[in-house]
Image: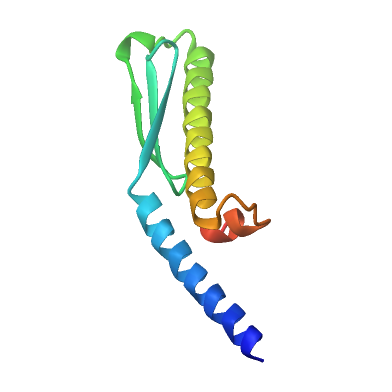
Length: 109
């Protein structure tokens, strides 16, 4: 029974650490660019797009498809960078042990 109490205490401690990390990641930002910096996306550690900058030179009404591709590339890379950031922080918290499903549950996703 004593062992079970220790496990529960450890789980509560880890839950508190996850909540703290969640708050901290909300304030951390990563960015990515596409088209040689013509499109820039900024994402936080909660995988929320915070900023999207498009250089006016890349806006061509005759080639909207290229702009769409650049935006997608920048946003996708920023999201990837954000996931890597979360993975690094999770690794610090768990001592490198991968916990299936934790990432999805961390932000209610």
